[in-house]
Image (cartoon, rainbow, N blue to C red; front, side, top):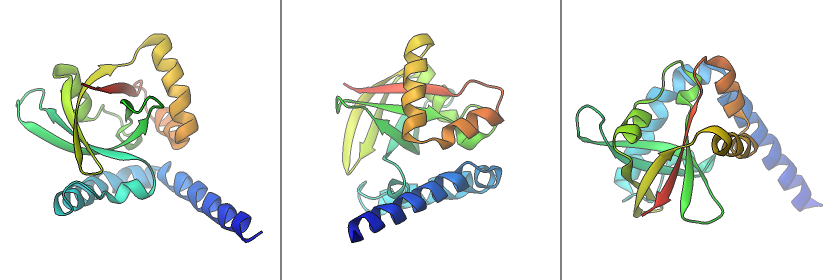
Length: 166
């Protein structure tokens, strides 16, 4: 009985976090704060801790800047796939109008590195399109329903990338 009560509280907490993360206020306040905190924690802990992992699986993506050619580090939520060798990244930009910069970087330079749990993993990114995107989008919405609210707020199609371990 106690265990069911714990699960029930955890479920309510998760649903509450999902409701908050789907709001416009969150989309306005989170982008300048969460990535900065995650980058700092990641650096301080040798890549082992990200605040965001308390909500979702996360990685730090190191990609090559599309225009600058410089290494760009971006903490991102991800959806690990069952094969254990690939991850889906969602270019939601917290439901804001433009595509996030990291998506432009991956389109220009698909070879990247993700850091997860203190391990650097070389990956190659591929933009998902057509039926493959539709199937991945369904899985992403099941995984984190607030992505539907993000998509509803923007005219652009949110980009999905599959990263595969090289």
